Image (cartoon, rainbow over all chains, first blue to last red; front, side, top):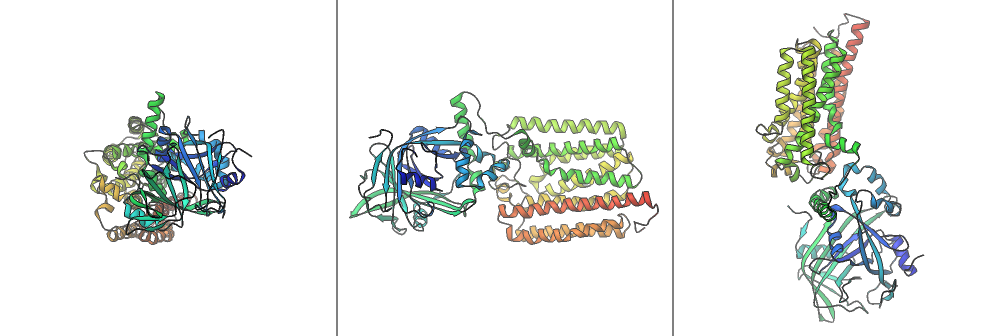
Length: 159
Length: 461
């Protein structure tokens, strides 16, 4: 697999939703629930231009954190992880550029394909940007309890 | 108007208390945000959430923290639903060993309170800003897109053409049953009438945009709230004006050709009145739909004018009571399409000063109005048959009573829910279509009978 610890990659593959925290213009953390899509190297999330404030925040400050913490969204898994990294907004072609991730997205949310076929009904929802996260540091809680000191792993040469 | 649902700290804490765990977030000294799941005890009364300090992590106490609750319900084979989340921000202190966040402000979304489609509509300004910024950054316009086919369908609201096709065909068929039929002018009538409706549809978007009605509407549906191509940035306002003018110009050319080929004072009068009603539907100074006269305008335009117009083209100017009577149920039912479609728009319409009937009247009055109108439509058919204006076969229309019943039954429970009302709106449109088709079938029988067995008494006269 990739460069992340195995259990974290498993969580990424399972997660229907993760909590992406970005840094707002005023320095506040702002958290958005999104579907994480992992290709073995980078973590991708997608955002419609309708809900693109997060994209503006990332363009201004690419440092982000992604929490995988909800057992319901993780197929019952109770271990948890947080991945800190540098995000890049990819929006050369908001109309169709994001569709290269459709197969991984469909695996988690099968209805998206049928929904896409009806894009005439809500065209702006399918004008989307990709958020590509290059992981830098991973914190992992095997018990899922914050009272446990997490195992921290630097990724990609990060300190 | 709020783009996303705003919450105060108290309401945010109330919601946060319902989540089984929370994600604490902050921005570390290295500039990276950090988030970690904690089990917080939330007390909305005191606006506080208390939790154990996460082990092994340095929490900078000199800045704001966020506490987020998030929920989905997995749906295997589909994805998930029941989306909701809330974040409360505040400072964190450590009064008695535990950490305490005091809520200061909040933000969130719950799709059971604000349906996804409404949430999306409330966010189109953000999408517009994003594309504007992208265009400025690249020095070239970047716009949302749809394929030409979908865009044409959406911008012109092509599927609604049944409102034109039905009365025009009926006018042609009634004339044919009386021995008048001219194929070229019949085809031209259908084309010209379709241009008028397409012009009306596009002009309606133009004038609803200039008067703020489409911008004020955050609950459009498949059948209501306009095409929204201007609001979405899919087609520019100027281009929509050009398209509307183009359709009207094409309609005028077809109208002139028909006047030359099959001209009569009646056709000229119908053309002029139709043009005034069509433009005046949303355009100032008449803006009939803004004055609660939209239903009358639509009834007249898509009932007698279309049907009689098609009829007099075929008869080269002669008029009889039969097409007039036949147009009335069609007129009433097409008016009911608009009437029901205005129900989900009524709050936005009210904000924009568009005083449609559902804006003016209570729910009970609106529902009573629907019932009375649909009963009147059936009564005209029965009366028309008994009086000998319509063929006995027109009673086929009564087969649609169960469809009408479905609309009646669906309106009240879905009156305040634009997205569940959509199914009722579809049945209401179907009612007009099926009544129209059955009237066409009724005249089809008359045509066949005239050919096979002339003199068969299909009229009670």
